[in-house]
Amino acid sequence: MREKYRALCRRGHSRLIYGMILLCLLLSFSVICASARDRRVDDGADLLTEAEESKLQERLEEFIDKYDCDIAVTTTDSIGGKTPMQYADDYYEGHGYGIGSDHDGLMLLISMEDRDWYICTFGMAIQAFTDYGIQEIGDIIVEPLGDGEYYDAFMQFSDLADTFVAEYQNGTAFDVDHTYHVPMSFGLRLLISVAVGLIAVLIVFLVLRGQLKSVGYEREAVDYVRHGSFHLKREKDLFLYKNVTRTKIERSESSGGSSTHSTSSGGTAGGGGGKF
Figure 1 (cartoon, one colour):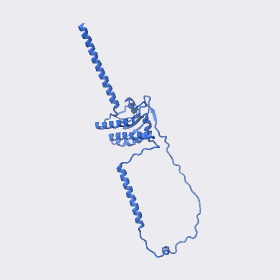
Figure 2 (cartoon, one colour; figure 1 turned 180 degrees about the horizontal axis):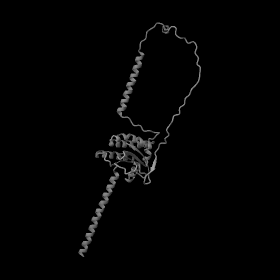
Figure 3 (cartoon, helix red, strand yellow; figure 1 turned 60 degrees about the horizontal axis):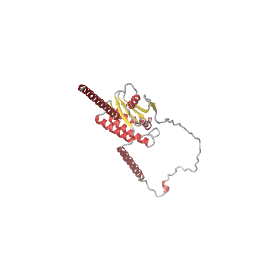
Figure 4 (cartoon, helix red, strand yellow; figure 1 turned 135 degrees about the vertical axis):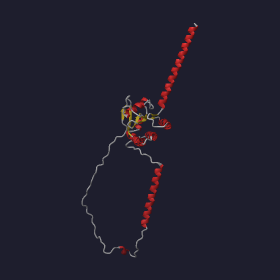
C-alpha cells in the first residue's frame, strides 16, 4: 500500500510540475504577444539605432494616447513579392494594430528592396488622411528618406500625422480644397520681415530724395512756356472698332477625398505611396 501511495504521490507531483511548466509557457507566450503588439516600431531593415527606435516608440505612444488612434512604423528589406499596399495591409491586420471596432490607425511602411514608401489607413484614419494628404506627407518625408536620414523622416511622419488628425478633428481634413502649407521657421520669418522693412525704407528714401531735386527759378509763369510750342484748340474722340480676345482657362477636376480598397482579409483600407 505504501508503494502504491508513493507512486500516486509521484504521479501527482509530476503532473503538478508539468502543469506549472505549461502555465509558465502560456504566460510567457502571452507576454511576448502583448509586447509584440504594443511595439509600434518594427525596424526589420535595421535603419535606426536603439536610442532612435526608443525615442520614436515614445513619440508614437504619445500620438496614440492623444488621439485614441493607432500609428506604427515598419521597415523591411523585402516584401516577399507582394505590392507595398498588400504587404502594409497584411502587416497591419496581422499584428493586431488598430483601435476600436473599426481598427482606427495608420502605418508607414518602408521597403528597402525597391525603395518604396507606403502609408496604409484604417477606420477613422481613412477620412483624416485623404489621398491628397497622404501624398503631401510623402512629398515631405521623401527627401530625408532619400538622404538616408530615416530617423528624421519617421519623426516628421509622426509630427505630420499629429497635425493632420488635429485638423480633421477640428472639422475639415486637409484635401484638394483645403490644402496643407508647410509652416515657415522662425528664422525665415524674421529674415523676410527684416528684408521687407529694409525695402520699404529704401523706397521712402528714394521718393523723398526725388522730391528734393532743384530746378531753375523764373519770376513769371509765362517764362515756363516754350515759345512757338503746339497749341491744341479743338479735340474730339472717335470710336473706331473693338477687338476682344477670350482664352479659356483649363481647370483640373479632382473630387478629393479618400479612395479605399478591400484587404486580403475582407477589411476596408485606404492608403498611398511612392518611391524615395
